[in-house]
Image (cartoon, rainbow, N blue to C red; front, side):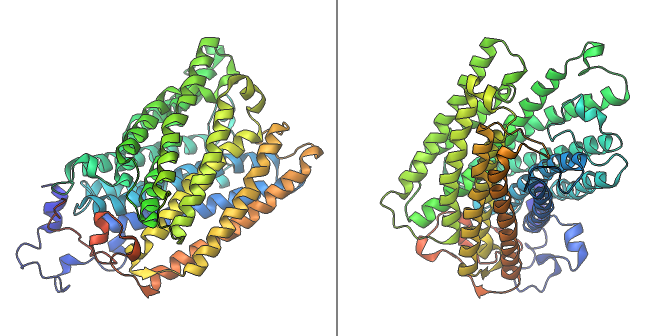
Length: 540
């Protein structure tokens, strides 16, 4: 029995499991203490999700500045240095502040419920790993107000450019260290919980796929976050202690930083998509009313993707001057990732084949994910071809590629998960009509926003610039209109979540009744009790 379980259940064994709320230890503490000292996985999951939504809007506001500047050619609205700060900060806030904490919030909420555990294995550490985040981002966002302005050297923090940042530089490095520490603790917690706290009878190959995807993601996190910490620490010593890791004048090599950074950075992009694969693998069977096709193959495919993610990093660097053998290796290894990814897409499609499909909001987002993520995958294959990449590198084609994977991929995966499990979390059903409005507006505008960027990139428009040649004016205007449309549509999402948390029709325990979903979370009431699974369920 884990320490969490003994701690949580200590108060219960004396009084015959009465659940009438008469005992203080059953429910949460009152007021701010509940959140500050939270050790309950549901409370911490909620805090992660609220934090992530807040960051999503802050990062979104930065994207609106970028797209407003690019609405017309010429320097229009903001100082070029501030524009560069916006592109840098937008990426850092969206990756480390919106997408990753959202998935960690989903893991906190759902992993214990899906494996029949009373809580996460390390509840105190769980609290700590959350509370690091607000401080890290307060530090990062405070750089907007320091002399010399916020970081403007790109989120990749390449030297020598990043070393010219001024006051914001040490703040950026320290903020990234804190985010990394939070991620490592969150990941260790997930691994220990899944390995040690599964319900009796739940073997590894009986776990829901969302749990599997998170187990694999957590290993990725533990493997690569220290690498990022090492790379940024070397930047710090180069700047302040006179080392020359990345300074050519002292015998260092700026390209070495790129290698170390992308050895973290490529697994990182899979950290941001694998949990979304897990979510979609839960949703598609539910609304197809069929078991998932090829469960074992899905597990092996996810593990293969995770393994391959470690040997492809230099495809971000084809233009730095690599030996031909290096280019060939990284090109072929990158193309190989298409195989397990294709297996997953095939299995999701096969699950729907001859199923009795209904199009509720979670399913709509899962389908949109399937279609648009695949487009992002194909543009990735184009980028993997070395001679072609010489044309695409550092153009908007790359921006189009990774936004197709990250927005209709990771972000839609998160939205699908929220629409799928929100009734379970709150005990209220949301307005289907509003959710469908949110879906259609998001799906249409995300394509108006990012599809034209493929054309801009192929025509040669560079990334990270505040001004551009007039030949790119039309597509940029369309892209910016898409951006404002997409940004405004998300206000609808925030309203939906807020209103559902407060009121709405009572949700049943199974929520998606017709669908008879499979996981253990549906055996609990909606909302689930504050302490779930005090007696572990048996899995047949």
